[in-house]
Length: 61
Image 1 (cartoon, rainbow, N blue to C red):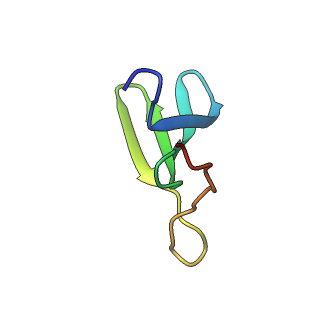
Image 2 (image 1 turned 60 degrees about the horizontal axis):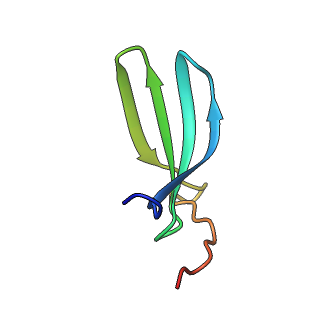
């Protein structure tokens, strides 16, 4: 994808046990990525009602 990456990292914490929040620039859905040691996982962030957290993203032309 080069210049036009679909995902952007908006938060990062840690160096050995890493927690990051990524936003899909196409849909606005927020994802939590967590890695520790040799394992890692990615899941959508959910609000109290169980719906995905969505960030307003500017429309690209």
